[in-house]
Length: 120
Length: 412
Image (cartoon, rainbow over all chains, first blue to last red; front, side):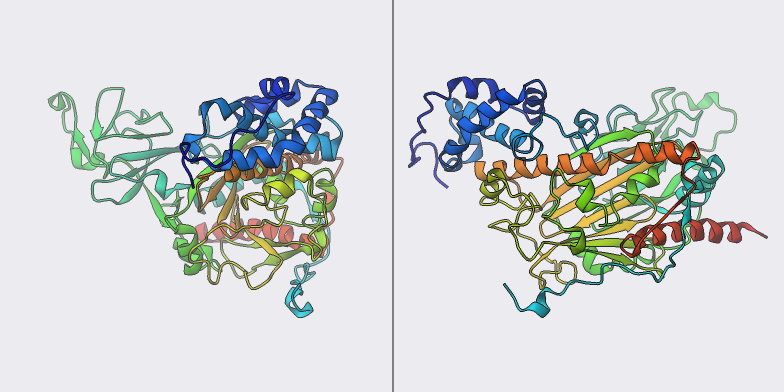
């Protein structure tokens, strides 16, 4: 594991992706889920197609830092990379924004801990 | 690829528990629900927490057994011992704690300020002289039986539990206790949801592999073929009536392995639907993990009445379903891992795993409310079960025998 100071791989070129990174580079899974649910397939596909070929390079770049030392200017890239996980099924399995054979995904409330059962 | 005999899978199921249809009354009858409350939820060992969440003296957790309206406080005493009490001040019955977790020096009632130490003794009564004949020793918090197994906290609301926790959990033995209780496990993520369905319908969906190919046709079908799941049943067990094992297909490219799945598989093992290129570390899994079988992914076990525990290498998945009424329940799922992500690659792998399992669970949960309505309105009075669905028979049998045995015990 190297530190930010001796990172061997320089930050990947992102020109042409700026709009996608800005739109999808959201800091939490919940925000990225909301982004998918409020997008249309054309928008999702455009993001996926633009990102996919660049993803291995982005991950390798981000992977060289300890987690808490990922440079701030690369956070958006990291979050947009994680947003690709959120759109994978929509693109590759459903050809739709939502899964029509599951419960409304927003009914599943993310927990914060094992004992977290929300307001009793 | 190993020799063919190494790849042999266990028997997919069994007709040994019978072949007839089962009635559905136990899902919708209010009378039956009353029997479940009295003879099952008040008498079974119930999983309510994880020991590591109540770590140091003064740590407490408040668990609501919604089924019975029982609020339980689990607290670690100065002597390091975990104890459970009814969350009820012995003065006039107010709740002692309202937050779900916390750390306190004493349990102090917000109503008049009676305070109890973490052993449950009444230690302070404001203006005690106002009481005519108060014997503070008699005002101890009402205790609840508690034991720990596999790092999980179980309670039993019976005055005197019929079985020790270890007797209850057989055939899950000390090897499971050691593996699941390993201090390396830490909570990673989870969800909860409410359903307008009988609680057992949520459990049912997790204890057979027959549904996989159809229910999950838009997510992971093929990655765990229904034919590669095997049903277990343990008729002699008190608290573990059945379970399911899952194996990968021999052809690992089966199922839709998207570019995202394959990329994430390079960095971790969180997603169980793609063969990972690296494995989780997992200490002490001998006799628990079936690592001698190259295709084995997980075993799950129904911990009666309401827990489905999935045991894997480096990952625990635990589903809990508690009834609120005969027609409504709370479902929770939680994941534990032996490793915390330290690199972005691992975070990426975990994000892919989290989202894949979330979407798969949303499919598992999709049918319960419709089934419940169909049972309730009388459209369906009986259900058919095949040999792969034998765990549902084992579950049903245990449900009835648990009630009958407890009723018999109460007769003079």
